Length: 191
Image (cartoon, rainbow, N blue to C red; front, side, top):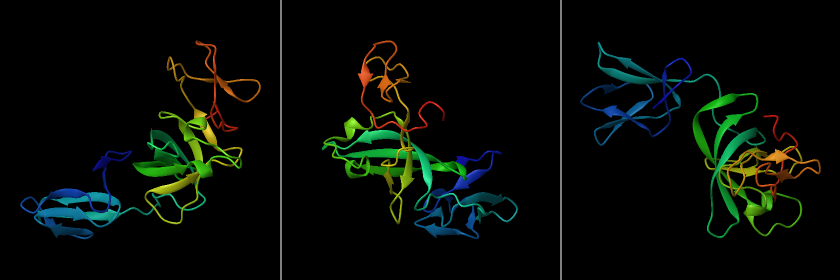
């Protein structure tokens, strides 16, 4: 359960909301092995008089779909250095999501040219702007091939100072005075 903007609790499908001893399952809530679980994304409504728990579906779409532009933070890189795992937290034209969703960025979806390692484009901690290219999710498959997509905010690999965009379009650390390779978005520093 996560607090929404006005303090409401938001549930996602499969999330344990309570135990059967506390409440009876209401609309969009099921009982499974003594636990009450949500079947929809929505607001949790607790009726203490009837001891009932229900989930009121959200009217606004809160899950990314194909071709959406999303913002995500790179959380980790696979051991073979070809896939980055991200946490999608914002969808353009929808706003911030009530929960983060997992995104997967494969090295083939980074650049039209050949890239040997995902580390040449992104690093853990980077904020990226990407397009959702997968048909289903989660996890959502992402692409940063387009010029406007890529890293929009990053830190130095050595001293963790925020990186600046250089005159040639690359990134550099003003503290270490080193150039750092990333697949930089045309929106770098403006988001």
